[in-house]
Length: 337
Ligand SMILES: [Zn+2]
Image 1 (tube, rainbow, N blue to C red):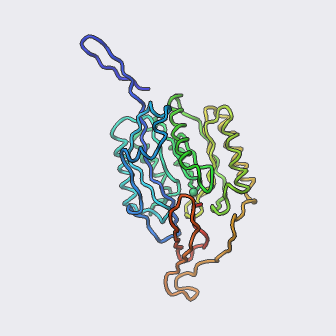
Image 2: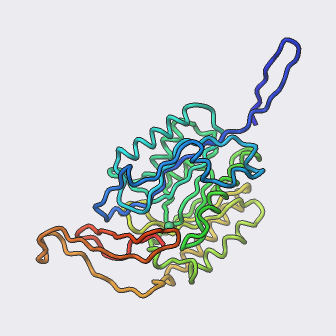
């Protein structure tokens, strides 16, 4: 808690300034196998009070004593890689906003599977830009989709990272609230939480990892017990994102806590459980393989080969979407369940 003092002619009055938390993020899941590019027009962008209005827990007693500072949040439905100009503009806006004053924390509201044309680790680039302006001291808490990726750069730049625990996702807002509450509690406690990352070298599509069926159901069901242990703040399992061709795409487990040994044990255990279940994941719905999309100019193809696939309506999705796969790319479903 920072304190400022003002002096009048006769008395000295101490006032305690609230801790300040910036709120920002760019939220999209990008398939790098799609020729489509996601531009600024594909995003819903919120700033100011409209950004704060996204979070109904801001009025809760645990949040009310902090000053939440909205910067910018851009969110799009799943699409292709993001046009660099759009990404660069939002990143610059976030950096500029963070440079306007002192911040004690940052709530980073992201998906974790954004691709930007020409970049291999977009969220890593974003956290690097954020740290370049706020420095190493403020705590950063990231709320993510379990289909996102946790690169070493992103992990290093954040102090708290968590993600959804359900697929189909029914705990989106709960996850963001948890990320915010963990941040607030860490700031109140002082110091810096311990964190542990285990990369699990498995890359599975969402169609094989519904948390409503085994083995993902049992795997994610372990989280509450692990998280309830003394010294553990949060435990999270990322399935990773199979529809981008980037080195960072893989399963991951992150645990955060107040006790180093308990935190590392939590991450190790869940990482081992994920690895041990690797052969048990199977498609959760009827499916068939489409083979490979013919390459342009080969196999008799004369123009771009495009595979259109109608996708089932998903919870939270208001419309059906089509996916376009690049010629030569492995074909398959490309939805985010
Ligand atoms: Zn997802």
